[in-house]
Length: 276
Ligand code: A3P
Image 1: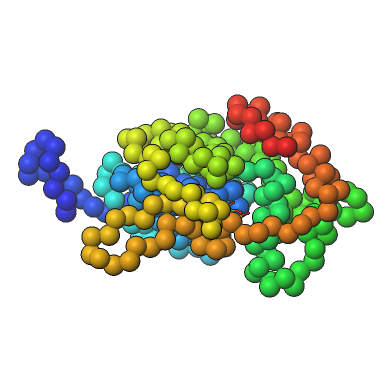
Image 2: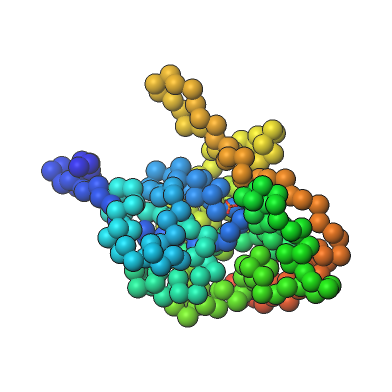
């Protein structure tokens, strides 16, 4: 129990596990971990650190909503409980299942130039298979054309996936976060997220510093009161991997392929992300 000082002194508010009222649903390699960890610094945010893959993997979904709720950290009634699994955005059935959980859940999608996203996705797969995979160019093109149905390419067609979500959720319930901005200048982007989630303004410049070695913004570690060494506020080395060099013609093919799809996406969400 936590005593609240507001109103009735004897009033106690229960800390309990609750279903998320916000979800980071994608996109894979968009910066979902950075977004979750940054938001988790807000005193009214309770984040589930592990990707639960509840709405995209049937075996998990079969465990039921009570199981899902049990994975959440404890929270007070007015706090935000948030989970992230980037696979949700591209899962056909996820909008329906999430709607069935709670039609008013707030959805966050962090987007990034789909061509760069594809290369980042490849770099992750390359690591996973210790380099024993085909070159990037073969993953995304064949005989000078884009392989539209390859997973790496398809994940970046944000507009198609969005249409699937709009069957269940109004656009106002989905916030698109700019992944490039989250790297260059995270605070303004995070303030938009705070506002969207109805949180009190808390996130500011004092929360971040630019780590030259990492080459990314990192969270200022929380002050330690017990004299133990502070944890690095940078993400792990699998976030911000070097990207392989890619054949320029293949980059052009991908950019040309995504261009009209990106424009359709900008129009739909009323924000121009200006991907090259
Ligand atoms: P790269 O590894 O291609 O650089 P996700 O967490 O969704 O897998 O996204 C990973 C991406 O988050 C990284 O892609 C990186 O560019 C981006 N990112 C954003 N902010 C970051 C930060 N502060 N530290 C490290 N990576 C960050």
